[in-house]
Image (cartoon, rainbow, N blue to C red):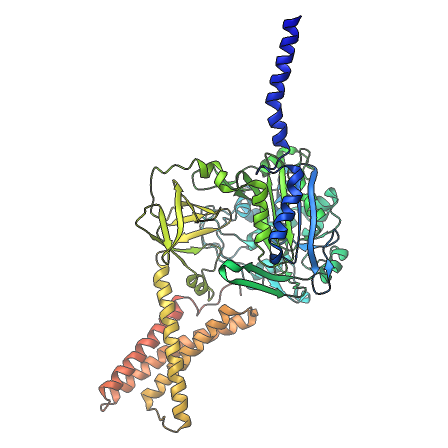
Length: 620
């Protein structure tokens, strides 16, 4: 009997020793914060960063349990209207998760094949700017690797009376396909909205109606609007009209202190499925919890949710997930998935760890907010420093990633391509083979084969090489493409700008001389003046194009102006040369001046032609 009692006590003791740590772990966030301490941790963080917000709302959940939920600050600071449970925030690109859930629902019903050519679901001839023969699939749309450049024109309007159907908006803004499908990730609002249009066509329902019936209603989300004008939920529309937006950046260590009130900042998105969802913290938390539920009400079969949360894209040839059917993977101490969002009136982030079923949602009424949206998740999920990828890094080979990089989410055709060239990012090898610099400052440090970290940051990049031999650097949502021609393009832009400044000075001098009646140009001189005016008009047109939100009509006008300026530059060069040939008494100094003018006109013509400024982008 004593032996039996002793065995039972030993077994109970052993069981307690094994199970106690597990039970304790279940009551902690992945970063190690006790569930009971989540509130005080977030509140202390808010107090430490009180100058960085006007309002933010945050919830932390574990499975079906909400561990913490609170609203901070003012939804309308000027009128002292505090944020509360009824406050609505714009969710930005978190809206795309509705698209991907819808796609998976239709997949579950056998109506969408994720690996089929999307042309099967679109009207014949709908896609007019495809460059490659490889088919674009729904999986490509989810992974944002269908290959399209970014969309700027016509994607949104401040006048809701100008809203058009989703089909029309897609046709009006179709971007060029720049990359081979499935090869390079280039974040695409247009591609996501195209997936929503496919949902419309396959389901036979208006997209907003589909979301209400198949997502919002099953989850009890009564305080969410998804349409471009918010009118699918008039209560949300009314509350949105009363909330205000702000631009606040408080980084005193960098000398940045911005605090700007933006009014309501209501902007109506033509490609609305990609970013128009607006609602309360409670509603988005309900949606977030459904994504970790053991009995997800969004799908008939739990296996569909499991498939959605499985990796659909990886970093290069590794087994590290980058995207899970539209949910971006982010490496904290653990691997998480979710989606962030930014609009003119707010920033948001939804992040969860499917293993522990712990998640966090952050909503703000600030543009490009980065303190709460991205540092609060780190509090919950821990630092990348503690991630196995970081801790177990092993360097066995050293590939060279030096070169000039451009963001793949950019413009590669039409006038705006100059903007991407001006923002190129150079990486230069240093004496240390594991360190790369940019403008003399350390930019990236190798910590494992093909993995590089930005100093003093949890952000890392993975390098790989495309079929065309181009190096790419990828993080959770961004891809940088190495283009060694960029430095030459950049040099061309600099020369173009320098000549434009010189022309401006020369024209000012000529204007003064004209007023003083000391300027009487000969035939060749008139041609020089004409070419200079054409060059200056070209430069001013480009500046307007790159620095302001302008209408499509003005874009067309500027494109025509650029084409005319290019032609005038050529004609001017011809007349200058003719004047030099016919004027036998021309002084050598004048010859040099005219030769310089000819070269400048030829350069301006070549510059405009090279950057395709004489062509109308097809989406205009």
